[in-house]
Length: 225
Image 1 (tube, helix red, strand yellow):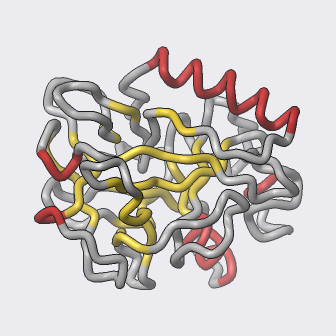
Image 2: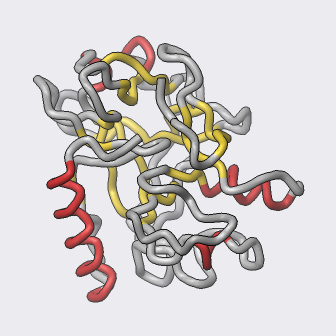
Image 3: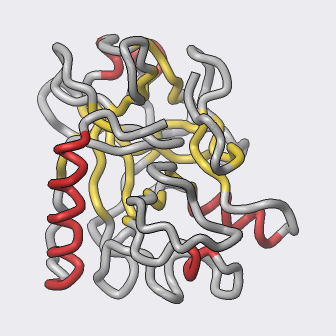
């Protein structure tokens, strides 16, 4: 899976790099992102997070749900469905005011994930209502399934469990724990897999279109259906 809107992604990388150098204090918001790896699709939608192709699958609040208690499932669904149309992402200044993976952050030190994904972007996936107000962010209630939870502050803290993701920006280090191009690894589940001796990192992945997304998908696999 690849970024759907390449020019938006190039602009995002330019701004991300600049923000990291300046350690800016405000979150940059642009349309683009990925679970397994995705981008922003522009149809009639204000903002979608989707994969490539004419039959794109997109992030979707199932049935238009808005609860951030963990009951609102995030599914993959058909391009341009109304419940897709208000998703975007924001960068998180989680690692010493940087929006990028450092040698010690955001993954568990010693896991190899920081070194192997050094320089990749730290983001959250934000759902909005039709007025542009934040509803919540994609997270993980503990059952390895994506749900709508509370969002983090600009510093990457204060949000629901599993709402911090790392997006590979083609800055692959080539190690055993490298996230493949444009995949989106869940920090919480990746650290948990490492702690329990399982394969890591793990990514946001669609199993079957219309079903709740998994937050423990195998990396370097086709992430959407």
